[in-house]
Length: 185
Image (cartoon, rainbow, N blue to C red; front, side, top):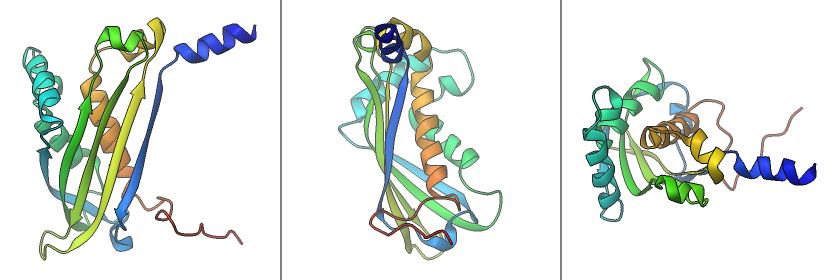
């Protein structure tokens, strides 16, 4: 019985990741800002993977799945992050790693990964409002994990990355790393 439970847990998909504040995010933008503009860059290290995934996506019929990586990430950030109104912020997103494992690699337990730095700044003054490093890893070991992983992995990784960004800018975000947690009275 225990062995079957462990085997089942091994087969299920796991998603992990971190969001680190490299430079603290200004508290006055949490929960009261919207992304006015977003610039997406891809480093030399991630460029081959992005090009390969864009080539695959260009063969898809329509919709977001057919968009190139930069357009997909850009559009999802503008649609999903922050409020509809409030203080405008601008972002520069620098993707330094994008790895989407093929089906065989997923069967053997390889991971999908998307990581990069997000620079936040005031679009009017250019003043820095913070810097985040977001790292999303998804592991889908075994046959069941690979089947649950399905298609659209690139889109799933972008969605998870954007969700972490949105969470980091929400008012309920925990304190910056290195700060003591707030006391409950």
